[in-house]
Length: 529
Image 1: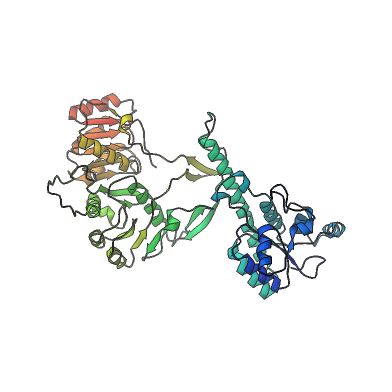
Image 2: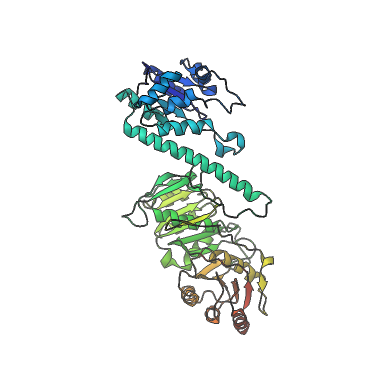
């Protein structure tokens, strides 16, 4: 690691995040290294009593242009890029009085914290890329977590191994790639919010910079490796959640829990969602005080709405709920935990747990109990295909009645309207062809993932087993024939919500009128494959 022409190697320290830099500088100085730095980094190292040479002394130029130009100089970049095994490079070093730099410790302005022109780092990425390109001769460190690793290897070996330098270079290029991706995304967001008619809804290029955030027990199947990656520089609810006991999470645990957690947050009142294989198999609200779900005029003021939501959700399809994911959008009560504990469940996720509820749930040694905050927005849906990705906007679920149209002679009652809105929100989260039968804010039959809508309607009716009598039906896409509507009528529903748009809409409307069913067209389809 000794620099060409020098008795001691040189380390360049230029960091925005100064955590750990003094300790590293002290270690390097103790190992006989010469330190080169600038600005706040140099001051902090000097204040610690560690000798350091300012970059301005090396280059003969002070920081100029409001600190935009500090290290952009041949004596810096020549030192980083010199291949000291190349005679022509050594000749250039001698001719221009350039000393090689053997270690570059650099991290960048925190662009993602407050995006803007002045936080677009230029000198930092240039040094990182130069050092990483020349990693055969230069160690490059961009992550403070590597400081101790580097210092220990220098102490033990006297130099960094080729494997370590290669790994550090790889991480350095990942660092600058993520930085550039964040800047491109910022430009795209500016364009998206600009009042410009020709701005694309989807960006012309898509730059995904992800880091492995969590190793999973396995992928979809035990023989597959699985991990969760996150966008570099950002965090989601998975990064801040707390797991209380239970086994490690698998790929499908995360996939299904994400589906349940997002759906339960579509509802304002106390709600419970149970998901199995990414599809809801139980959804219900507790008493939301808009109407009495049990028509009991002497409602107990201490009624447990969370317990009610869970009990009603589980009643939809208790067979499928076995081994499912339970998501609740309120603090879990002790009574709810006691009702849930006997049912084999993979994951329970909620924003909080009342005293005692965690004790009940964590007594189940294999149950994963999560405390989490609400999920954030997803910018794009992406799916891999050969040679790239399919990309689309996320599917928003509109529940604005003013945009919907009643197309039958019968109008929905106020109670039916509430159930139609509820069923529509559930249906949009079900794999197409999706049919949902519901009543009193409780799903009773869910038909999912069939190749035709009639089979989904029949499956939903079989699951409902007569409990949807007088309730509603939601369909994620139009009924191509009246047979699906007839199946819903046979299940006893009194109102239907669907997008409309079939060439046979008039036939389906006529069938609804025959059955005395109120039907609403939303004008918006919600396929989910």
